[in-house]
Structures are given as structure tokens and as C-alpha cells.
Length: 197
Ligand code: GRF
Image 1 (cartoon, rainbow, N blue to C red):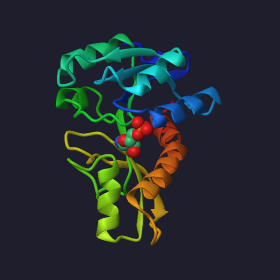
Image 2: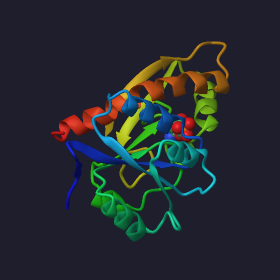
Image 3: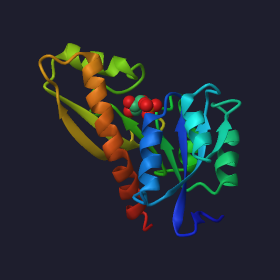
């Protein structure tokens, strides 16, 4: 199976929502900073704004007919010779057969310092609400490999952010998201470098 696109490894980005991380990655790609090449945008949600971003940037899109169907995902990724799968606000569980097939080649970004504030139910604003409720002084961003458990696989990169006394879940979310945008591409480059790309 051919895995490379020229010298660059081919990347599929999985999205469910607004796609600000996806946009931030495309920007790094345009600036020539990304080691891989984003060639495919996959969604479980036909109405995801991220799909519009993909179309505007001439990235091929695919809406999964059944996100729990491992064979559908594997054949799609194989067809596009995808080397790395990047989850960017993708809310569905990746079927374990896909995780096995793409072992250590699926990454996710989470808006907290895992293992804290992660797992089922910790998504979107709920993460930041929980952080504030817990009264912790710092939170952050985690990029990790995906395994069969939500927000659980080995950590690739983390970045810490101070929680300010006056923070609301919304102000915190905004600051955390900015950091997500600034580190995700670096974490992806780290993974690709470690794989000899
Ligand atoms: C981000 O906070 C990311 O950490 C989480 O989902 C959110 C997606 O936001 N997994 P966006 O769609 O990239 O704007």
C-alpha cells in the first residue's frame, strides 16, 4: 500500500462541528509548516461547518453513512492512502477495528489536561464548566493517540493554561481553543517526525 503523497504523508481530518482546529491546520499547511498533507475531511455530520471549510479549500470530503461501521472507515482511508488520522472536534467513537488498523496513527485534541476532565461526557463547554467547578488553578490542552477508550491513549503533547479567578467557562474555552490552534500542528509534526517522515 502506498502511504506517501510525494514526500508528505497523507492526512485525513475527522470533524463534527465548526472546524476551527481544522482551519488552523489548513493555515499551517498553507504556510508550509505542516509535515503532512491534508487530503481528506471526514464527518459524521452532513451539516458540519467544517465541511464547508474543506470545500472552500478544495479538500475532498466524505460524510460517513455509519460512523460505527469500521469497514466503511477503513476502506475510505485505504482508498485515499491515508497515513495519519487527525480528529478535530470529532464526537463519535472510532470503532476499535479502525483503532487497531491505524494503531498509533490516530490522534485527538482535548481541551483539558488529561487524564483530568476527560472521558465520556467531557466535551465542549462541559469540560470548562467542570474545570471551574473543581476550582483548579490550571487547565490546558492535550494531544494524544486514540485508543479504544475515550480521551485515554498515550499523550503526545500538553500545554498548560492558568485559570484566572474571574474566568467563566466561556472565557476559558476561548483561551484554551487559541492554544489548541497553536499546538495541534506541532504535535502532528512531532508524530510524523517520530515515524521518520
Ligand atoms: C475543540 O475544543 C477540541 O479540543 C475538541 O472539540 C473542539 C472542536 O472545536 N475535541 P473545533 O470544531 O475545532 O472548532
